[in-house]
Structures are given as structure tokens and as C-alpha cells.
Length: 142
Image 1 (spheres, one colour):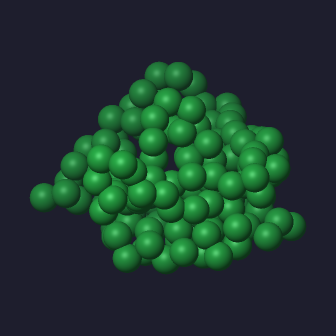
Image 2: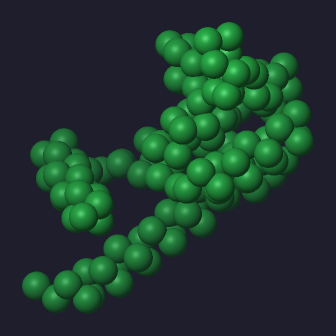
């Protein structure tokens, strides 16, 4: 197997998927990463508090990038940081009324995108794909 050609295809797919996902948010005031972030907070906040560290893990980006993302969402009125009583150093992320007003649209856009990516792929192929991406992720953590 030619790993170089395989990585070129993977990189190309990654860029193509990013452009495709970006198109879902083209006519909104949000970027695709902002939309994905709000989607994550909508889903997770139904069960627990969400903190910036959760976004670092979910998005697999550095704290400084998460901070910039949160600053932009806060500046545009979609969320706010709120100290927790147990330890004021920790700030939970709280959705605003403005974010809640666009919740259904965001949920629909992200869900539709995710579903569209797996059309025509058999369950057993998805299981192999999952094993491969988990191993590749593990390989990059070393």
C-alpha cells in the first residue's frame, strides 16, 4: 500500500469535508466551527455543565484557540461564561437567549451534515472506519 497516496487522499477528503460543512453555515452569521460548538453545548448542557476544557477535548484544539472561539461567541451574544460557586476559577459556558433562538436551525444543519456523510456506507464498513480513525488518533498521541 502506498501510504503517501493514501494520506494525500485523506488530506483531500478532510479539506473537502471542511468546505462542505462550511457551506451549511454560509448564509448565517456563524462560522461552521461556531455552529458545531453551539451544537455540542446544546447537546451536552442537557446533561451537565460544559466548560472550556470540554471544548478543547471535543474539538481537539489548544486552550488558546478555544478561548478565542468562546470570546467570539460571547462578543456576538451567543454565550456567556459563568463562575461556579465551588471554584470561581472555573467558568461554565451558558447559552444565551440569542443562541436558544437559533438552536433548531443549528441542530438541523449539523445533524443533516453528519447524516449526509454516511449515506451509502454499510455498517460493517463504518465499524472498520471507526477502528482505523481511532488507531490513527492513537498514533498521533504518542
